Length: 273
Image (tube, rainbow, N blue to C red; front, side):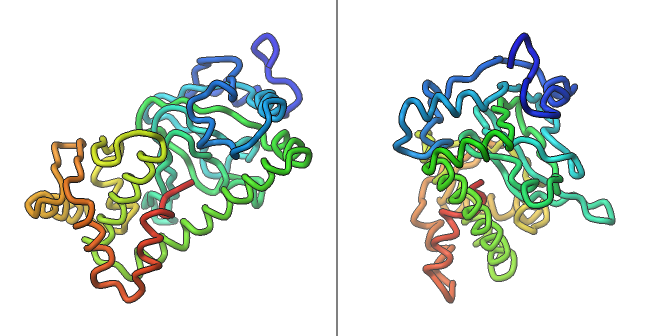
């Protein structure tokens, strides 16, 4: 980006000028970012990291409730979440909103647009969120020259496929207690991977959004959380959650499962972008 204008990547200037965005930095240093290990493959040389830095045209701040992209928008970029939380949603023909996933710092958003060049869902900030804007045309060019990066993006897309299969299994075979236990354990693992507490965190999403993702009614989510608290598995104070007995949650997930191994893998794979 030169003098506030993106160069070399069609459509990026319009993105930079979108009303939901505010420019926070014109250049982002991947080499000094504390989320480098989450976004980038391990073992990249410093010159390769510098090449990736040239791809990041801007760091953008999305205000709470702002949309990163909408269904039907032309696909041009991937977005690496630096700070904050987003949800991806789709709207059914009858107008019902379905939450497809939640995305936290260190994860890539926008993969849905790669297949046909158009976004199939929309991404909405659950709180003030910073993302790095990475034009996909530039990613393809650099990935050809940096095999580790190419393999990394293949793994990211593979994880997305695994996540979708996990959601299908969760919705098709698990009861309400098992679904919520998997959801909480998965959040715990994702926070731990980012060097945050795995036992104590704040839910950035509402109970209704959790229910939409898990295929449960709002009242069911609230009732199960209350029962988990009564059983000594959790401490819940509005959106603040502390996991007191993770072994108890894992027992709920695996205790009645016909295939324990596949359900254990769900806690690691579900919802990871």
